[in-house]
Length: 86
Image (cartoon, rainbow, N blue to C red; front, top):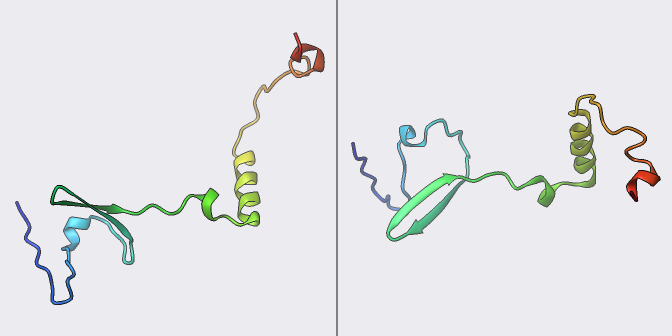
């Protein structure tokens, strides 16, 4: 079934909610036009490495560290200076 859209007096397209699925209000979309076809998809948040403050980096790093379970790791012999140069 095709849906018809009409440009309003301000030049905006209004999409019926069922076309957007579970989109929350104020969701930002990326719009791409290629060969007279328009594609839109939700914009992802900027990656942490682009926007994080020092405190956010520290918090994220510590969360990553604590997310690792205890494991066998490397033995003292495996990381000794002598075995590194073997």
